Image (cartoon, rainbow, N blue to C red; front, side, top):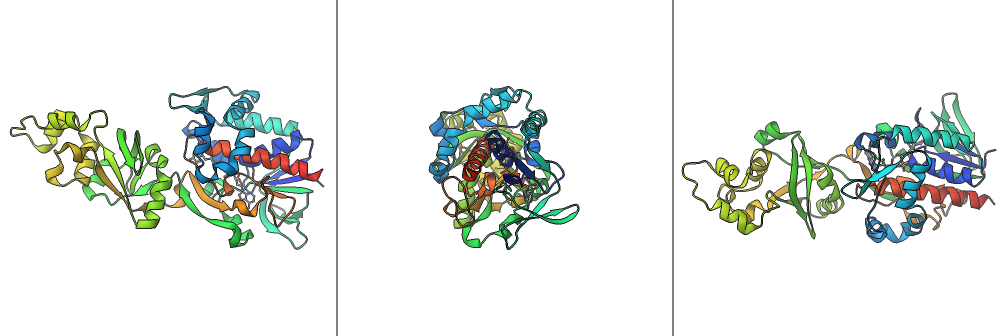
Length: 394
Ligand SMILES: Cc1cc2nc3c(=O)[nH]c(=O)nc-3n(C[C@H](O)[C@H](O)[C@H](O)COP(=O)(O)OP(=O)(O)OC[C@H]3O[C@@H](n4cnc5c(N)ncnc54)[C@H](O)[C@@H]3O)c2cc1C
């Protein structure tokens, strides 16, 4: 019998395996898919933002009202530790201009290969195509395997089954069926796009077009960023950064209005003075372009959100309303909010009603924006669960 069975070979499960194996425990690692860490590899396509370099208190603040619960784990395995861990695996990292931390080669595959070699060296045995089905009456783990259903027992177990976005990469959220609804917070899309009722003309002309260096504002938050127009609405980093409050506002009010500043580097007076210059026989569009450089997709956004008489008014152009109807489906989201509630767990991530079973990663009920926070919290909770499981056995 292995000391520890880990189900789910994403970043949280792999980190739990590393912690448990380094603590001298034998580890069997199971995953439903033929290869481990499919979502981690997919994150590599976007450059693999491993963590963030901002001061620790600011970093912690990104986890909102889960910051206190996650703090001990993030203190133990936080941004510096993530960078050292990557370095130990031969992957140098660097801090980008936004403070985000990436591998120097922006790739996930070499880091993952090196990590899997390290885990194999520690004796971790990986069993692909083993889908966890729940527990049998004796508490053994039920697994669907290519050779039929099997059960396995270990002295402790760690579940690291992921959230419910991008189900084709493994995290399909089916594990929620193995738990009582009382211990689950419903899954909701996080870091997601939103739907907008574009006019046919705008959709046809601009779907796929990036919107760069525009001001976005919602509630207290206001910053310069970029996003992409899609056939259904908007997606991209500036939208993801506000997606939790936008999603919550839509749930409460049926819609959310994102405000766009189409000329963020000019104040209202400067824009008003430029637009007040004589227009002559020029159209509104060419006056906007000539006097303020607002053209193409920016002019299109102005037309979508403003009345004809506001099109040349500076205050209106600095607060163009964009009405978001609903989040895009969860399967498209970068991550999910919701999952196993922390009050069902001890502080070291053990299920209160199933002693010896620990939980880690995105399947827990926390959320954070993009920026390396997601992976760091998966590593931190994985490390904590691995250490706690190893300690629990003794
Ligand atoms: C396109 C994209 C880009 C991203 N980029 C970044 C980024 O740059 N930086 C960042 O911080 N985060 C990023 N993320 C988010 C990050 O990848 C996830 O938060 C992270 O992978 C979650 O780790 P996890 O180990 O908890 O779960 P997962 O990575 O989802 O792994 C869960 C594993 O459990 C397995 N599993 C599920 N159910 C079962 C079962 N019943 N039996 C057996 N196995 C099962 C799955 O097959 C999967 O391998 C990105 C996400 C996406 C979709």
